Amino acid sequence: DGICSKMEKDKYLIVMRKKALHQLEEDHFDLLEDAKRVKIGNEMAITLSIGVGLDGLSYAQNYEFARNAVDLALGRGGDQAVVKNADNVTYYGGKSRQVEKSTRVKARVKAQALKEILNVRDTVFIMGHKLGDPDSFGAALGIYRIAKTLNRKAHIVINERTISLRQVLSLFDKNENYPKDMIIDSAHAIEAVTDNSVLVVVDTNKPSLTECPELLKMCKSIVVLDHHRQGKEVIENATLSYVEPYASSACEMVSEIVQYTGENIKVRPEEADAIYGGIVVDTNNFTNRTGVRTFEAAAFLRRCGADVTRVRKLFREDVTSYRAKADAVSHAQIFMDVYAISECDGEGLQSPTVVGAQAANDLLDIKGVRASFVLTRYQGKIFISARSIDEVNVQLIMEKMGGGGHLNIAGCQLVDVSVEEAIQTLKTTISSMTETGDLG
Image (cartoon, rainbow, N blue to C red):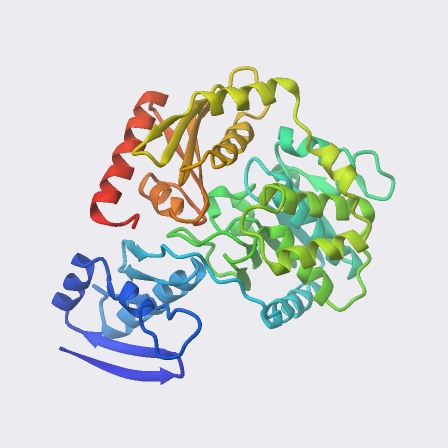
C-alpha cells in the first residue's frame, strides 16, 4: 500500500504505511542491491539514495525528516537508505565505492559562493579538526591565501602542534612573508571574533571534532568544506556547505576552489608544498581514493611551485616510529582469513596514532587481506585505524563502534577499555555484521 509521485527527472516522493517500512528494514533495504542488477542498456549500474522520515508530529515534519535523510545519504556517497526520526538516524547499504565525478560545475559554483561570502566579511577564521594533520592545515592554507588575496584579515586556528604538523609549520615560522597572527589558538580566536566574522571549517563536518567548537556558536556566517562522509552529527546552519565524499582530500577540494575563485590567486611555493603534502598524506602517496581530479590538483600545485623532493623530506619518519610500525605489522593476527588486526605500541612515540594509521596501510599489502585494523593506546584512549582495499566498507564497522570515516579509510576512539577488550569488541562487531550480511 502506498503512493508514488514523480517530482523531478530523478526524484520520487513515496508515501507508505509504517509496516511496509518495517519490512524494508527487516530486509536491510535489499532493493538497493536489486536496483544495481537492472540492465536496460545502461553502462553504469543504477543506484538509489533513499531518505525516510517517520514519527514526526505531522506529515510536514516527516517530509522534512525525509529531506534531511536524503541529504545525509547523498553526503555519504549515495547508494544507501537513511531512516530518520526526531531522535535517531539509521543507515542501510552504502557498500559500493562512490563514482568519481568529472564535472567541475559544482566546484566553480561553490568557489564563487565562497568568494561572495568572504567579500562581505572583514575577518576570516579558518579551522580544521582537533589534532590537526597535513590535509586539514593544507586546506586551511588554501583558504587563507584566498582571503588574503581578497584583502581580508585571516587567521588559522591551531591549538596543538602535532608531530605530523611540526615540519610543515616550520615553513611558516619566522617567515617574514607571513604575519605572526596567521596562526592563533582558540583563546585568541574567541577574543578576536566580531559580528562581521566568517568561520571556514575544513576537513571535518562534525562540530565536536573541530579545533574550537565555541567559534561555531559565535560566528554568524559558517562555511564547511570537507571530503568525509556525513554522519548523525553535522554543523547546523552553515551558510555554505561543500561536502564531497568522492574527493581524495580536503586539499584537493581547496586546490580546485583556489583555481575557480577568479582572482588570479598566486599560491606561494611553501603554500603549494603544504597543500600538495596534504594530498600525498591523505592518499598514501596517491594509492588511496585517487581520481583524475586528484592528479589535476597535484599538477596545478606543481605549477605553483610545489617540489616533490621537498615534500618527501617533510614527511620522513624517525627511526623509533619506523620500528614501531614494523613491529605492528609483524605481530598482526589474521581474523576470519581476511581481516588483519594488530596493536601499535605508542610508548615513546611522538605521534602514535599516525604510526598506527601507517601500519594499517602497510597491512593491506599482505595478500588476501581485505581490511586492516590497528589499535593504539594514546592519551588514555584506544584509537582504531581501519583501512580496506575496496571490498569491505570499514566505515560501517567503525560506525557500529562509535566512529566513522570513508568506505576505505575510517577510525574510532574507545575509552575505559583495554586493548584486549577493544580487539574482542572489534571481532564481535565484524562477526555480527558478517552474519547479518552488512559486510557483503
